[in-house]
Length: 366
Image (tube, rainbow, N blue to C red):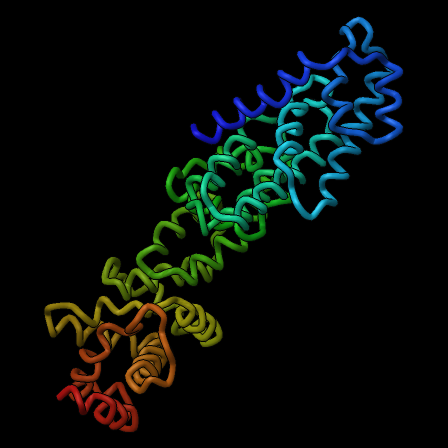
């Protein structure tokens, strides 16, 4: 509110008093100001002419001065408050409200103003951006550019979505979707609302690669929501379906082994799935932590029989973590690794060389 009050008062003081204090200009005066490219004085006096006298010449000259003024401002390294206030004022003039060329130049200037705000401190920058966005008509890319400036440093996905929602509903969304950070923000909103109608079909098509990549790379606890979204959009395929069903088995949520049996017949597909599992921040291993020992032994034997590559990935990742060979941003990627190695005396599914390395790396813990 402080920011808006400042704009209102400054505008009144700057322009209201100017109108009252100065002699009214005529068309010839405006022609001279236009030839001199004296933008400030021109726009202070452009409305001195009565509406009945604002003919085609006045309209054309005023439009040219508006665009010229913004082009001039966009080349200046430093922004001046009186110019900013004047731009805010003339943006509300009927002659400019629906002028796409003026709007394009004006939005460039607004973005420059926000960048300037961010460079001199972050106070009121969000409020200023919201005022610009909500008070004027913009091209669709203005909201996208605002998000690129503010997200994620100053605003979260929900606030960013408010700048993008009109764009995502439009047929022009295909030009902006399929890129960062739009994909991340739209996906976040879809996961919250599940409202596919809020996003134009062309945007959803552009979003498909990001959604699939995200499904494979997010933490397993979030992948179920992404899989559900992919299903609703008909974006899944055999590989994604088998990955999800295998993951559900490893989580202990669906112990149907038919998908694993199918994988056992396709070495190439197993290799591809194991590679995809390796992209997640940690490996799914809930079944290894089952409280009933006999069940754990059974699950491990099933994995070893139908998808031994996953056990190989799991043990290698565990040993890399214990040895410090690789760093993992989210900590231990194999929470039930110790359980697996302790059961190996009965199972014999891990090589003696790996068992020896495990004992070496964990000696300090014993």
